[in-house]
Image (cartoon, rainbow, N blue to C red; front, top):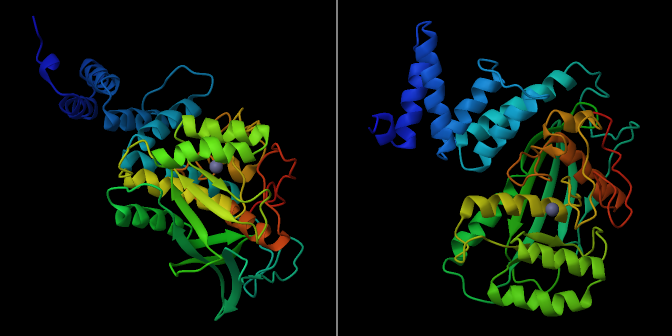
Length: 370
Ligand SMILES: [Zn+2]
């Protein structure tokens, strides 16, 4: 015989389940039944049910027998967030932020106002701009505010038509602008970040954005890989195989190197705009001189183990996975990321989270707090 439950949609099952669970009035059986329904909705692929279960776990309302229950719950929350639950995304980010504040509030500040100084107390002078600087970074101090202006001229290159280039471009621009905001860097100093995007018809000095359509994909597989080293060839092919977007910053990232963002989409029409925005945000991080934070065998990246850097630990989801934009493109941009951007432009060197193929040093921003 079919029970009433079996006729319910995952959404109905979830709503009924959480209502039973919360309003059991101490009746253990009703509570258990509610949880069972919630778990069933989750198993049926209901993302909001996944969020609710993860929240109950994180709040300690229910428990799961795991060596690291917090990681288990955060991983589930991250899964719900990346499957489109806005509540899960907000909860995950707030949870990381809460851990971050717990770790870093109350640390001594290096200065009380004034122009931005580095770890050694030296005033930071940053004025990277000009004809061969595809992404400008200019630091100013006015009316008590340290302002980092990141300016770039976008040039979109299409090899095939896509249905709605305007919407695609708007999604990319949104992703780049996500870097705007207020940050705390170099031992407690406030930094405001502004992103200015222009679209002039420049011959030089552009940040190129290329949607990898069918034709472009084939082109990259032939011409692109022919010019590349064996390792780079493998990386490009892997990225193409898995529809992973990637950035190209010339042979080596410098302030003046050519900067290209290749954007791939799971959807032929390049119309998964939220995803494109998140991807553009991550890839812009590369154009700003940041390395990847995730573990990747094909890129010879070992990953960064939890417990290595306090700045990253607050954002750790699992052993080597962080809710941070350079690890998971849906993740937030942290204070540490901005510190690394400034150091990249200051030192004219890419800032690495981990040792990579090109043996770059680990960024000085790591392990010092923000
Ligand atoms: Zn990346």
